[in-house]
Image: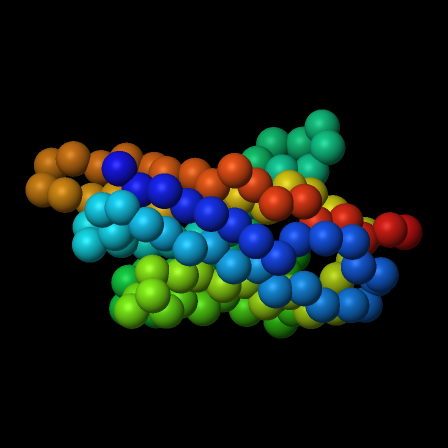
Length: 119
């Protein structure tokens, strides 16, 4: 089992910045990639950014150049620095951890944190 606790969401004006954090606990030794997803009102959950254990990153086109994902393996924490925020970034942001152990794999999710950028 892996537990994920997110923090850092809130309300910010357009053009502002926020930093999300996600702390993992439990069987973190076998956590592979981690990432951030978001789900806007009435929309499907989408990948925002992901980072592998050796820090290879991947971003949605809509956030490239504005968001940066990083990872502290020693503290089992992943961050999402969000700059130049836009109203369309408003969503609940979820942390994701991909657990891999031999043949077994599973996705773990945090509880979500709200990010609101008023138009």
